[in-house]
Image (tube, rainbow, N blue to C red; front, top):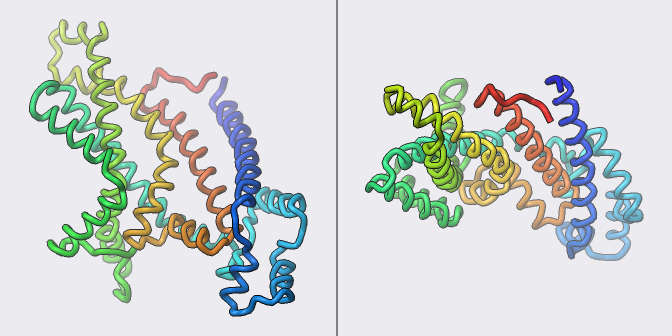
Length: 325
């Protein structure tokens, strides 16, 4: 199978999955209790039947469920995710406005967790049974079991309130007027705590997996042959063990990359980070169905894209792997 055909099959499969997910999200969300028209009427300070009927007609809530679904599905195919009755803006505009902040947070957290997890896993495997191995595994267990919101609050108390090293909340300093490199540095300072908080949980997972994978690879014949040929231990680890041991970690990272978006909801709420996690939380409280469906669809698409990128990453991590079925 050629590389182009491989990508075509992946794209077709992704399209079918996205349509199925959009269908499931639509009907499951309609099972949730609550009437958006009542929420809108309550916010407007009017609850008479005439006004609520006008709201239903304006936002298409008076139509049958099948008709609403067909309109929604046609919108998905044309990249029209609907209109937010609460914010009076197209859903696509709201998501594209918030998505860069979420991608910056989740991308940074994923990079931190991968680099730190692989590094600590290799160190623990090379020093198995020693104090450093026990310390890394104990720390991994602690961070794995620690709730994200609690870790975020502790980080705020320690690094912002007591030490004063990092800003407490937000995406950038309000009213600073920074531009260019100064603005990037300001955003970077605000990013450190949320990204580290979100990344530490996955660092614990990758460190434990990398350690076990390294120990398994160390028993293979080609590793014993490399040592028998007189290669330095560091060279054996870098060139023979790590490239093979890292493959399960890359697989897990690709599967969990989409979960970072879900995990970012708590982190974005605690740190007031203006991403789609906060958008999802606000839409849930307001019964803003169109925003909820749009965010669900976007998160599903991100998970599928991350999985495809993981398949492509195999070709760079291990050149022996080809894009074949």
